[in-house]
Amino acid sequence: MTPEKKDKTIQTEHFTLRPFQKGDEATLQKNINNPDVAKTLTRVPFPYTEKHAKEWVARVTNPELKNEIHFIFDFGKGVEGAISLDHLNQKDRSAELGYWLAQPRWGNGHMTEAAKAITTYAFTNLNLIRIYAYTFLNNPASSRVLEKAGFKKEGILRKAIGKEGKHLDANLYALINPEFE
Ligand SMILES: CC(C)(COP(=O)(O)OP(=O)(O)OC[C@H]1O[C@@H](n2cnc3c(N)ncnc32)[C@H](O)[C@@H]1OP(=O)(O)O)[C@@H](O)C(=O)NCCC(=O)NCCS
Image 1: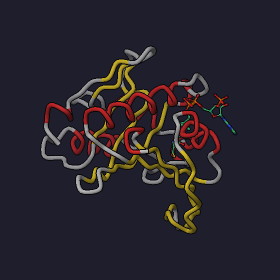
Image 2 (image 1 turned 135 degrees about the vertical axis):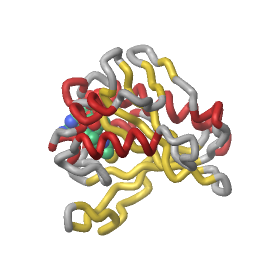
Image 3 (image 1 turned 90 degrees about the vertical axis):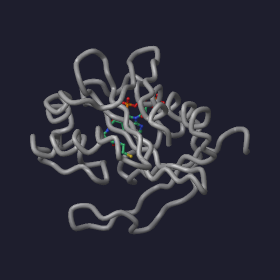
Image 4 (image 1 turned 180 degrees about the vertical axis):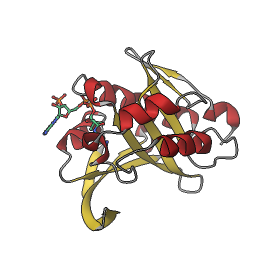
């Protein structure tokens, strides 16, 4: 992944998707520190402390970070969500999509808009063939986002994701670059 590609900013109709930057810690913590946001995310703790936010921003702004690209939702008020491509795999030309949005922004089609923008970006600029995502079975809104963005459900992975001492089933969704369908 070249640095130029990692630094890309994507403008959509309603917001900008841009990389994390120093100074994002406070709004990240404010908007992600919400049990309704954390409960359907695989790796985000609740409570989400200032220390978590500081460590996360330091991690994702490190130029040495490999195989992950993170964008924040910028409506002009700091971090009001994020969407990422993780486990970028050059050999298989695949990546995992993950995302969250600040609760006051839910229900306006924003995540669908972002998912479409980032998958187009990934197919066009990163040369990917397959983008996949997991949703918990109790998260129909996220499954719906993926379906609206063109993803197809490939199955249910049983007891696939450990969260707070439980091992939960997850839907597996994937979108294939139309050039390779
Ligand atoms: C899931 C999440 C990203 C959705 O973001 P959003 O911007 O509200 O999503 P959109 O508005 O683009 O689309 C949501 C769709 O789900 C539908 N939906 C919402 N709640 C639903 C429910 N309980 N059951 C079924 N569908 C539901 C909406 O009606 C909409 O579909 P429609 O356009 O056909 O009406 C947001 O709720 C979130 O950040 N949740 C917490 C973190 C999370 O779960 N991340 C994903 C982990 S896999």
